[in-house]
Length: 120
Image (cartoon, rainbow, N blue to C red; front, side, top):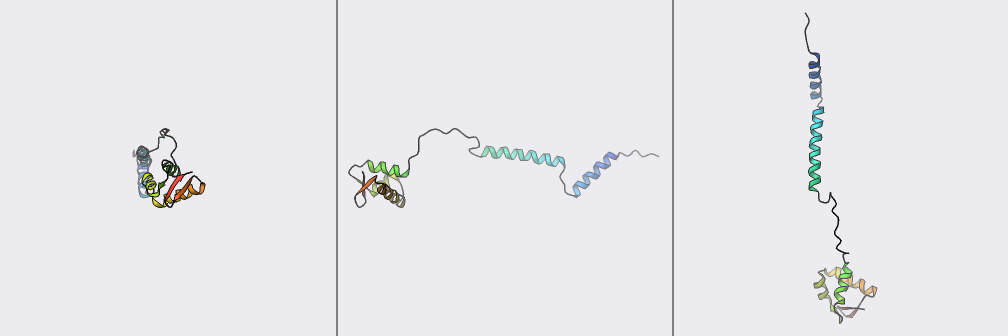
């Protein structure tokens, strides 16, 4: 009376049952998760701007706010008032007042009268 029992099948069943009860992932589960992670990483790289660095176009240096204000003032040899400078540059009141103060301190502009400036 020999029983022809396939021990390999029972052993695999025991392992699968043990893994399920202990809530442990199988190799198939891990491979599936790796495949999903790879897909997500590829999607993220496609969505992110700047992942592939494009060569920058050389458009020259950007002018500083002080340089922009100085150019506007230089365009009026007899002097220009504060409102005209503000309209031409688009800078806010406080920013432009700080720029004018700095340019005056550096000696690049001078006050003709209150609120009117010209280059030196």
